[in-house]
Image (cartoon, rainbow, N blue to C red; front, side, top):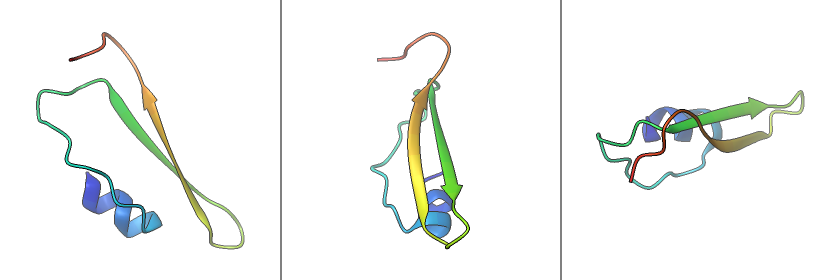
Length: 47
């Protein structure tokens, strides 16, 4: 996942543990090519 986000936006994410299931990363690329990354949460929080 971090490599996909970096490839789309150049934003580097810290490693995401496999047991963490409550994170969602949304990459929005504007018309001028600038990318913005949002970290969202969903479902039951994991430690």
